[in-house]
Length: 270
Image 1: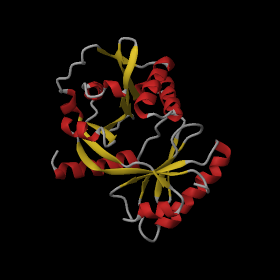
Image 2: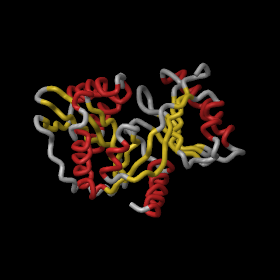
Image 3: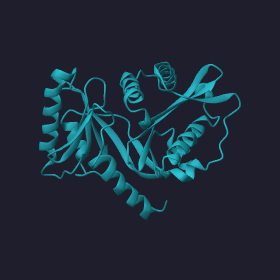
Image 4: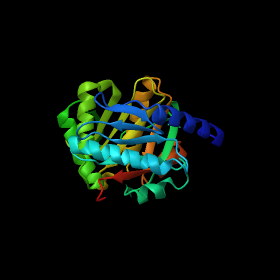
């Protein structure tokens, strides 16, 4: 995509996936309050700010309002943690500094990339020797995915596990979760989330066990999910890409829309 098309896609992404976002689970709630759009969900789901329309005069007050809201809510919901998902084109220009001053802690930035689904669905990709794909449909499969993620990233992800189980149970048509298997051993895992009517399908969680990297498995999982999205007439695939996955995705044809940084607030002591 050329720069003009990428800018149009970014505007559509901001409008559809952020400003007019749908909840990422049936029991979640998305609402516009003041100058922000936020999601709240009980338990282990994702809570945070998806979009904001701020300037130098309104930013600090709006940040304080969201801190107060999630802080008070946390007393009833098991903790006040929430994420402010900041994009590089969000205003004001010093919004990240203002979040830091309010007690937020930034995590590693990721690059927001997008590609046309049809282009990726047409990729001639074959599984590496000894690898088969398994679509995840149940808790046992989700636990295998969590095993892979622990080997790939070195972290436990209870929130992701709960989110996947909820979607598979309540909204199975909104998720495509897949494992790459070497015999009976899971070596890579990824998922795709698709909200009804959306022009964008999100590719998430792509991770491969270290000893299996460099064999084309990540590319295989991208192509598989692209074919599923193409069959549903979803025009774009979106990834929040790490520094490791961004070069692979750009070689596959993804274009850069910007950089996104999660700012996490964990309470007054964060």
